[in-house]
View (cartoon, rainbow, N blue to C red):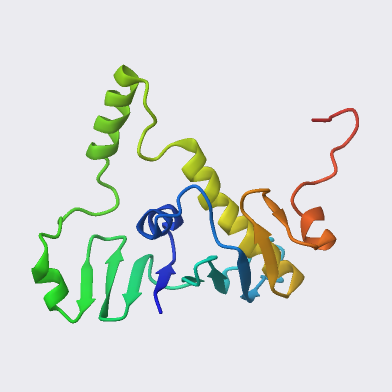
Length: 177
């Protein structure tokens, strides 16, 4: 079974899974919301999302980065640029770039090239939207305290009025969309 552990870069996990234009179909987990009034989002989370093909994405608190678990081992890319793997031979099989998450040269170059070509950038807005949607779905499942089913195409929860009601807020008059 393939698992993706992700604590920060959901767009990267989506890219590796080749699901950038869609997302998981199910979310379930636990989270601890602070009771001191400081924030209304959970600081301690453990959410499991499942894609339609059965791949699981685990969103957990802890070291920031992405970990890919497969049948023959795992590889973990940390925010600080550290790359670890088991078995260690995974790292010898390919040239591993030694830059951390703050390196933006490739994205800047891609952005400038796309200005000229009018093509989409490698990290275009729809990809960001899909990654942010995953966080919102996870948050809604935690607030409801139960599993939710998500339709990434319709961008609605399946047969779940309570969850769908949490997708937007009632606006104050005279504001409307």
